[in-house]
Amino acid sequence: MKYLWTEDTGAGFHFWKLINRLFFNNELTIESKESNQGILDALSDIKIKEDDEYYIAFDYVVDNQDIRNKYRLLKLIAKKLEGKIIILDIICFEHLILAFDKLVAWTGTGKTDKIKIREEVLSAIEHHRINLSKIGDQKTLEYIAGFKRYSTERVMKSLAGELTQNEKWSVNGLLMGECWYKNCCISDYQDNLKCGKPEVQDGNEKMRMLIWSEEVQKIISAVNEKKRPQEIL
Image (cartoon, helix red, strand yellow):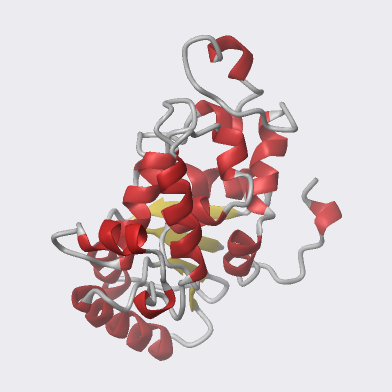
């Protein structure tokens, strides 16, 4: 069997389950271990069968020492169980949302200051961190400096939360906001909530567009590199 373990809960866990249904035809068993430590604990007790494969979505940023230490342990376990444990190349779920090229247009967010900060931050991502030396915009630097416990992941989570603040696009709840994966709900809420206008209304098609975005594909291509587009549409 193929398993995908994530530390994500709530909307992030829902995201992986949608990927499993729409991209992998429910071939994977998706499990949340609720934290990076939870993943390590589960791997320490693992009993792998001959045909089992485990794909690990472990949020990794290099500017958080605790995460770096846990990631080293994860790599040691993966090396010991070579070929059975595959670590996916991920920063965090929120980075995938921020990097989606249709995010601003679809959500209709009017937060021009945060839109600019998003652009600056995404252009400065380098080796699983925000390279501050690549940011020339003073407001972006001030925004980042405002975090008491700064890390790339904290910045990503905060920005994603602000740019999807409309509840129908939110990525902070128990599930992803309805407008990500259901037939377009904009017409029902446009009078009361500021929304964008996705070019497609079908919920599955919107999720497929997110799944086929560059950053998401960089990660999930490791799960099944031989899967062709026509096999999932």
